[in-house]
Amino acid sequence: MPKNVLITGASSGFGRLITLSLLERGHRVVASMRRLATKNKQVAQELRAAGAITVEIDVTDQQSVETGVAEALTHFDCIHVLVNNAGVGVVGLQENFTPDDWQRLFNVNVFGVQRMNRAVLPHMRACREGLLIFLSSILARLTLPFYGPYNASKWAIEAMAENYRVELSEFGIESCLVEPGGYPTTFMNNLMQPSDHSRDESYGKLAQVVHDMFANFEQALAATPAQDPQNVANAVVALVDGTPGERPFRTIVDKMGMGELLTDYNAQLERITHQLYESFGMADMLEVKPPPSDIQGTPL
Image (cartoon, rainbow, N blue to C red):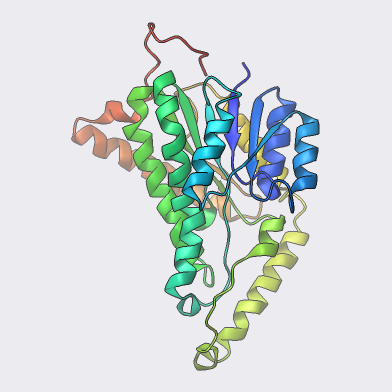
């Protein structure tokens, strides 16, 4: 059954592919992005030609979020799915990122997600159905050097999704995480670099290792054609198409070997979570409740 989907960051990378893939499956999509009439005018036209509705949303701006969601709701009676895709990455020595750098990053990757959730959730609760999809990362499950602030922002998203999972289950609203590895998208071309390089000299050769490691990773991506960004779009579509209550909470999407190492980790955490909730008599909070029969609407 077609769903009404709102996605952030639809102008490039995963967002563009997810939008096109959902449209191909017959879903109705509001694709949001910044600079709709200027920098992203061409991609907006492409998405509209494919059947999307486009709206302007800057997730770092509260008024922009409220206005964009309100516009989306002029097209949909209910937003069934919110795909929190907008995000930015980093590369650099963690110490070199200033507090202002961290705030800029978290304003997109964490606060921006919360702005979107708060704007959409009252409508989902009123419809007594919904699906929140969070684009997380394998780097939210383990850390690698030189991605420190990004690691921290995605770990925060994991905790946010965990809490929404239980706090919204009573309303028939599901929370799901998608955890991609590194992929060759435009995301890699727009990584935030630290503002302060005055400490590079005191790090010696390690400061150069940052650049060498990133170059090596790009070469590894180029040598792994199976690491196709479409894999991530397919994973999101599978969640949207999935049966309520049966969707996996976490979905790893990686063909470079890291994902295989984390599968057991995620499974063990899921077991621990269920045991913890059972011990506190709250296990039912992990199960999504179906909408009551007196609620009218289009079931997910």
